Length: 129
Image 1: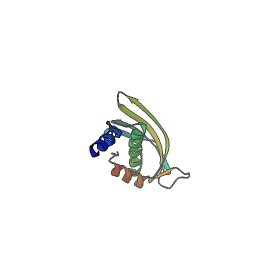
Image 2: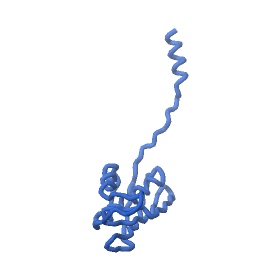
Image 3: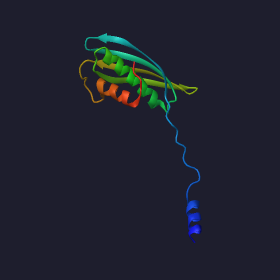
Protein backbone atom coordinates (compact mmCIF):
# COMPACT_ATOMS: atom_id res chain seq x y z
CA UNK A 1 0.00 0.00 0.00
CA UNK A 2 2.88 2.37 0.83
CA UNK A 3 4.45 1.74 -2.57
CA UNK A 4 1.14 2.60 -4.25
CA UNK A 5 0.84 5.85 -2.26
CA UNK A 6 4.36 6.86 -3.28
CA UNK A 7 3.53 6.12 -6.89
CA UNK A 8 0.41 8.27 -6.70
CA UNK A 9 2.33 11.14 -5.07
CA UNK A 10 5.09 10.94 -7.66
CA UNK A 11 2.50 11.14 -10.40
CA UNK A 12 1.18 14.35 -8.88
CA UNK A 13 4.57 16.05 -9.05
CA UNK A 14 5.55 17.87 -12.18
CA UNK A 15 8.21 16.03 -14.15
CA UNK A 16 9.62 19.25 -15.59
CA UNK A 17 10.89 21.99 -13.34
CA UNK A 18 10.68 25.56 -14.55
CA UNK A 19 13.90 26.72 -16.15
CA UNK A 20 15.69 29.43 -14.21
CA UNK A 21 17.87 31.66 -16.34
CA UNK A 22 21.00 32.88 -14.66
CA UNK A 23 21.69 36.59 -15.15
CA UNK A 24 25.14 36.93 -16.68
CA UNK A 25 25.51 40.55 -17.77
CA UNK A 26 28.23 41.50 -20.22
CA UNK A 27 28.86 45.19 -19.58
CA UNK A 28 30.46 46.36 -22.82
CA UNK A 29 31.08 49.99 -22.04
CA UNK A 30 29.82 53.42 -21.10
CA UNK A 31 30.47 56.70 -22.82
CA UNK A 32 29.51 59.73 -20.74
CA UNK A 33 29.81 63.43 -21.50
CA UNK A 34 28.47 66.73 -20.26
CA UNK A 35 26.06 68.32 -22.71
CA UNK A 36 25.68 71.56 -20.81
CA UNK A 37 27.58 72.77 -17.75
CA UNK A 38 26.55 75.50 -15.34
CA UNK A 39 27.67 76.25 -11.79
CA UNK A 40 24.26 75.04 -10.67
CA UNK A 41 24.41 71.79 -12.64
CA UNK A 42 24.19 70.48 -16.13
CA UNK A 43 23.14 67.63 -18.36
CA UNK A 44 24.97 64.31 -18.64
CA UNK A 45 24.50 62.08 -21.65
CA UNK A 46 25.43 58.41 -21.36
CA UNK A 47 25.54 55.71 -23.98
CA UNK A 48 25.69 52.21 -22.53
CA UNK A 49 26.02 48.85 -24.26
CA UNK A 50 25.62 45.38 -22.80
CA UNK A 51 24.92 41.80 -23.66
CA UNK A 52 23.13 39.34 -21.44
CA UNK A 53 20.45 41.81 -20.35
CA UNK A 54 17.15 40.32 -19.24
CA UNK A 55 15.23 43.34 -20.52
CA UNK A 56 15.48 47.08 -21.09
CA UNK A 57 15.65 47.76 -17.34
CA UNK A 58 19.08 46.12 -17.05
CA UNK A 59 20.71 48.36 -19.65
CA UNK A 60 18.85 51.41 -18.30
CA UNK A 61 20.26 50.67 -14.82
CA UNK A 62 23.75 50.42 -16.34
CA UNK A 63 23.29 53.84 -17.99
CA UNK A 64 21.94 55.33 -14.73
CA UNK A 65 24.98 54.07 -12.81
CA UNK A 66 27.29 55.60 -15.39
CA UNK A 67 25.53 58.96 -15.52
CA UNK A 68 25.26 59.41 -11.77
CA UNK A 69 28.88 58.35 -11.13
CA UNK A 70 30.08 60.68 -13.91
CA UNK A 71 28.23 63.59 -12.28
CA UNK A 72 29.45 62.67 -8.80
CA UNK A 73 33.06 62.64 -10.04
CA UNK A 74 32.54 66.25 -11.14
CA UNK A 75 31.08 67.44 -7.84
CA UNK A 76 27.39 66.98 -8.60
CA UNK A 77 25.83 65.09 -5.70
CA UNK A 78 22.34 64.81 -7.14
CA UNK A 79 20.73 63.75 -10.39
CA UNK A 80 17.37 63.51 -12.04
CA UNK A 81 16.40 61.28 -14.94
CA UNK A 82 15.42 63.19 -18.09
CA UNK A 83 15.07 60.50 -20.77
CA UNK A 84 16.35 57.07 -21.82
CA UNK A 85 16.00 55.39 -25.20
CA UNK A 86 16.74 51.65 -25.33
CA UNK A 87 17.18 49.39 -28.32
CA UNK A 88 18.14 45.72 -28.71
CA UNK A 89 19.63 44.09 -31.77
CA UNK A 90 21.12 40.65 -31.98
CA UNK A 91 21.18 40.26 -28.20
CA UNK A 92 23.10 43.51 -27.67
CA UNK A 93 21.23 46.17 -25.70
CA UNK A 94 22.02 49.87 -26.03
CA UNK A 95 20.78 52.76 -23.93
CA UNK A 96 21.10 56.45 -24.71
CA UNK A 97 20.21 58.38 -21.54
CA UNK A 98 20.22 61.97 -20.32
CA UNK A 99 20.30 63.02 -16.67
CA UNK A 100 20.37 66.46 -15.13
CA UNK A 101 22.98 66.80 -12.38
CA UNK A 102 23.33 69.40 -9.65
CA UNK A 103 25.41 70.04 -6.53
CA UNK A 104 22.26 70.64 -4.46
CA UNK A 105 19.04 68.67 -4.12
CA UNK A 106 16.83 69.64 -7.07
CA UNK A 107 13.11 70.22 -6.79
CA UNK A 108 10.77 67.35 -7.47
CA UNK A 109 9.97 63.89 -6.23
CA UNK A 110 12.17 61.72 -8.45
CA UNK A 111 15.63 62.89 -7.47
CA UNK A 112 18.65 60.65 -7.06
CA UNK A 113 21.27 61.00 -4.35
CA UNK A 114 24.43 60.22 -6.32
CA UNK A 115 26.36 58.62 -3.45
CA UNK A 116 23.45 56.29 -2.64
CA UNK A 117 22.98 55.31 -6.29
CA UNK A 118 26.69 54.64 -6.86
CA UNK A 119 26.86 52.48 -3.73
CA UNK A 120 23.82 50.52 -4.94
CA UNK A 121 25.50 50.03 -8.32
CA UNK A 122 28.62 48.66 -6.62
CA UNK A 123 26.52 46.33 -4.45
CA UNK A 124 24.72 45.02 -7.55
CA UNK A 125 27.99 44.64 -9.48
CA UNK A 126 27.11 47.26 -12.09
CA UNK A 127 30.18 49.17 -13.32
CA UNK A 128 30.31 52.95 -13.35
CA UNK A 129 32.37 55.38 -15.42
